[in-house]
Length: 258
Image 1 (cartoon, rainbow, N blue to C red):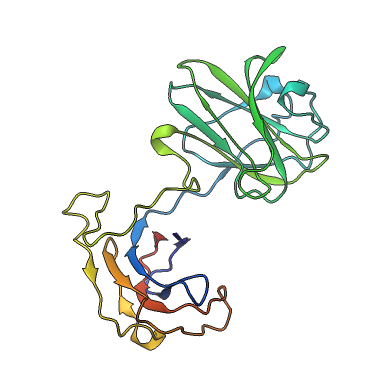
Image 2 (cartoon, rainbow, N blue to C red):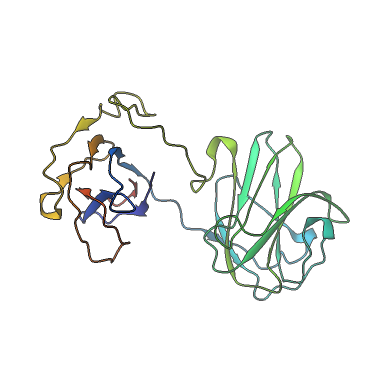
């Protein structure tokens, strides 16, 4: 199944086409629209943290941005990924939850190494090169009060601009895949009934962009593409010869997920 997220522009109409990946792909579906306040812009931090002793404290759920282009190479234990690339040091204190630290959305091929212990006696927790494309994600079960040292560096001798965020299990990364239950005749929502009305089955006339059906923020609808026709949308947003259904929504200036 599919999910698309973007920051909407207030008053702008967006068109959503539900379709399959090939001409033979058609069936029942559930479509849901959510809106949340935009994620704060990453905070750019000082470039003095190119040695472990100057590691910068990370706040759970607060993304930061930085660059390794003007940083030196700092030796780390081979047990946590060999390193010949420049890097930046950060630190985070465990809260007892499963922790996730990632560089997803960075502009170059990153590598993440996570340690515990002291700068003079580093012990590898885990490391990762590629998880979200050429960017990195490390997860581990943290210990309350334990300080973890996080080194952002690159694959081979790579350097560039990066985005870094640490989250706890209670706020797992948005890019982590979320299993979607198979549609039923009475789909359910994770939100309280007062926030999410029961899904409605829409009429079958919306297999043309001109007859797109309006979606309300927080609503959920069900439908089927079994009796729909393919609609050629010019290959500007992927290509498909599968039948589909059209919907539209009006931006409210917040982050939208459909």
